[in-house]
Length: 246
Length: 321
View 1 (cartoon, chains in turn green, orange):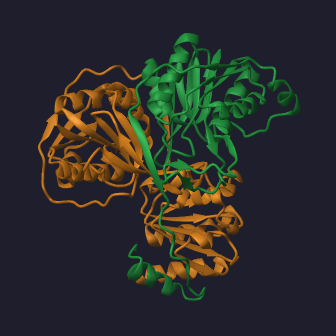
View 2 (cartoon, one colour):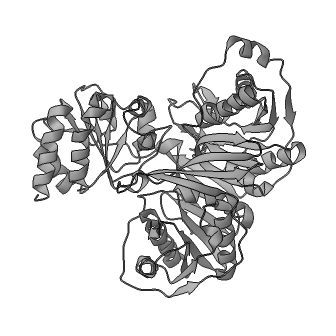
View 3 (tube, chains in turn green, cyan):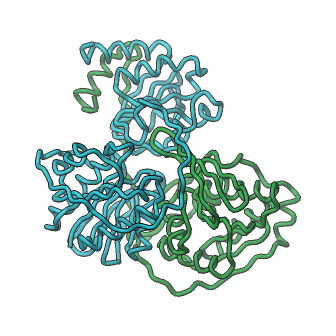
């Protein structure tokens, strides 16, 4: 069983969101970068659980510049087998998916896991694109994932509930909360992460389909209007007459 | 050239998010002077199909192949590809919901068409095709240019108003050969009757301040009076007080209702990330220092166990019950 986990470098969930260069670039000053939480807590940890239980080999892949390397090392410190970085720094999801698909075609994997989306671009695009590029099935928004031989059983979210579904490997699954129990790397993992195979691959020349131009911050809230706790009728009046939401 | 809208349905009923996508596609159609077709996949009764003209479809395409039944996004993407070729579609719109997020990236590959997910306003067609989408979990907005000739957009829920016109549109049967579904749905676990969170216009949500699952009755009573869906914060879902599909926040669902009422939720930044697209936020909390008040439009400082039942009565009185 060979599993590939796709991870992305994102600003910490508590980072201040600001932009520079005429609002075309995210302001990285004083920002801590982390592995995208959906990739780390769910996709990566579920792959680790499968390695521990069934002896799967797990490789990490990230498409990004050298600043991504420490995060791939952190990923390895969970006890995974190897990592590869594709040296491309753009943000077009089709291009990123194309690079990952090209790697998969050469290496062959049974299961490819992604997080449900990154917390910066909120694209939720790369997983489905990898599947379509490879011509393999895609199951999105998984809350539970189990394998029996070459068949996967996946719980996926739907409006107001869940569907339980099955598909044959090879398969791409985008993961969210529920798929794995959150955990931390242990000392031994951290010590051995340095010695794990780690390679950097130059990107193939590929097409880009979209381009992010610039950013803006939403207009600031006017500030909270406090209503006395013993006057709920006043809140109802404001919601009806002023906010017009009821 | 035309606009093609994927109209999502569940159990034969057209979803509200799909009507929004159709209204949005129709607005692009009138902006660019293009015809608009709606594509519906699966078993849907005629009266549901007949509603779509009123929301801006000039023509309704209906496919009901057996392959569409057990949801595999790849099959729906193949159907959209066939419909797009038939209609010579240059703009394709889907809802940014569970199905849309599954289908759209696969369709992007099939058509080599640029995809912008979670768009929040109409595209700017003046020079190039640019469109705004929500990024950083609602903390910023990005302007994105689509380079490819065909453009695919998924529309954030509650981002575009529904404006029924009363018009009607012809329904055409779309018969195309589709690949077999490779994803077999074996069972469905669904809460019946509840308003699905991503579709809700009003949400009442509870946090640790609710003190325990036994106190949810008063929250549900308020939700019922308002016609709202119920949600919760992460600690509440983690403690098992409420099911995980009610968890709203950074690691749970992102919602954009017209009104979000937070009861006993302090408002950690991770929770705000899931709700800051809401049009109006009401926070009720005993702690005046709770960070949620900074993100709120209206606030009540006090004991939720006294305020919430009184508020429910006030809502009922307002609605004349």
